[in-house]
Image (cartoon, helix red, strand yellow):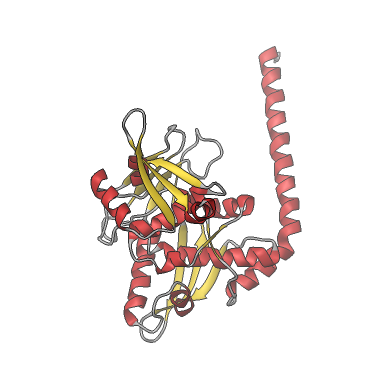
Amino acid sequence: MTKTWEDHQKLLAELDQQRIEREARETREREEAAEAPLREQALELAKAPVDLTRYRNERNLMMFPFCSTAKAKRVKGIRYASADGKRWLEVTANYDYGMAKIWDFDILRFALSKAGEVALQVGYFPPYVEFTAYECLKAIGRDAKAGKNYIWIEEAFDRLVSTTYKGNIFKEDESRSEVFTLINVEYLKNQKGQVDKIRINFNHRIQESAKLRGLLAIDNMVFHEEAGIKKRLLELVTVSMGKERSWTVGLERLQALCAHDGQPKEFKRQLKGYELPWKLSFSKSVNRNEKVTFENKATETNEE
């Protein structure tokens, strides 16, 4: 049977693709072999109590609205798109449990802090961490002797594992979208029926982000803040401002980033009522849209 030129080109393309896949597989196998001792050491530490030098969080979880900031049960989804439309995120709640709340994310912050500490010591970010409910509650500033907090932690797990996400937040290729959850949780209960031993398995997107970019340090005041919007701002403004003196953002965009499901004027009223670590000011843009500026108070003092 005579082969055409097109058949020949197709065969070459298939051979090239096979070669690329083989080389990628071999590279991955070499990397896994080299990382094996580090992985083993990291997993040992991931199962043991670790003294935290800093609290940490993953950058994307700080920048985008991954959870509800309301105390009440939220089943209405979150739909967020960046100003240029390139980055987008949809958050869908489970009707029975409701959407994961920003206070539930304290558990995730603690788990990431422990994984980050392991990575700092060993040089390998573990795919999971283990800890006790007592250890977690104590670390995030909740009374570890109060039975109600063990009920809360179990309910928080229901919300955390059932809230689903769709978008391209974790992708370098903005044209690719995916559906995912952030964690998977396993736990054992003690004789009192309370959550005791816990394992949190991280989604590979969080692992990859932590390996490539590291985790960002956060102030432990985030854990102690009870107001949902203010708790959100403590991370959002910090990561958005970076090393700059200030950060300016449209009021409606800030409202979307904070997952505030109300009127802009009500959101503005709440902002004015918070005691924040930044100077807060409002202004109007050329098109009359309202803007909010957060300015470092230390900078302001130095300039005076």
